[in-house]
Amino acid sequence: MPSTFAHDGTPSPRQHLTTMVLDDVVSFDAGTLAMACTDEQRAGIRDIVITHAHLDHIAGLPLFIDDLFSTLQEPVRIHASEIVISLLEKHIFNWSIYPRFSELRNENGPVMEYVPFQAGREFAVRHLRVLPVEVNHKVPSCGFIVSDGRTTIAMTGDTAETGNFWNCVNGLEAVNAVLVECAFPDGLADLAGISYHLTPSGLARELEKLERTDCEIFVVNIKPSYRDEIVSQIGSLDRRPINILEVGRIYEW
Ligand SMILES: [Zn+2]
Image 1 (cartoon, rainbow, N blue to C red):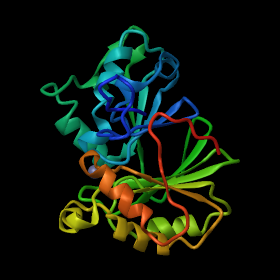
Image 2 (image 1 turned 180 degrees about the vertical axis):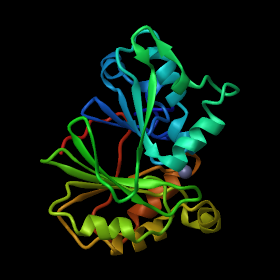
Image 3 (image 1 turned 90 degrees about the vertical axis):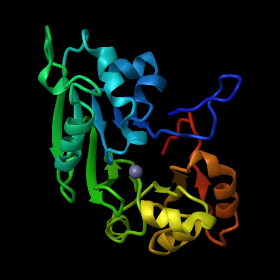
Image 4 (image 1 turned 45 degrees about the vertical axis):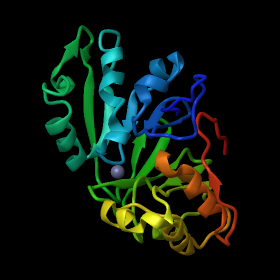
């Protein structure tokens, strides 16, 4: 979903916030969810799956629930690990930054509900099966392997070098697309290291671990200030094709 706009109002490829919506009903992260979703998506999305609690992944979450508060017929379900739920309650929905929606009701009932998941344990969300896989970020964070029974995609979320995620992806029957982060250019490898992100060189090392060739590869989570440099460095990698996930585009697999 777009989060950042060019001077003429069209979505900019330089993205500050992360949100991906699957089949118009399940959102993965909610960085820009309230601001960028269509009316149909606002009416249809009641499940939000969170990788981790960093602001660029959750900034639109309180506002999304706020918009819907009086009209909800069922709660918005936040699927997250226990630690992420505790961080959201402590730092966001704490009555100081925003209302504690988990304690509030409208005339139809609760407006928000936490649905905790455990890494390594697959769970159902609407028509999707979701396997959370712990990755290697500065804070507790999960990537996801998501399937509707026909199509499977894997997304790392924010991570530095990791192993388990690739083991899981390699063990799947089929994978249509893998979304991998790459936040910083190679010149900022030290910053990438202390913030637990990848650079293009790190991305290349991660993709060495991907043993399958049946999936398309897309790069996500590119820091907007360094986008041109990162995209150029990724283009110089001597590897199989690596796509940059386009903002605002509908992908079908
Ligand atoms: Zn992060």
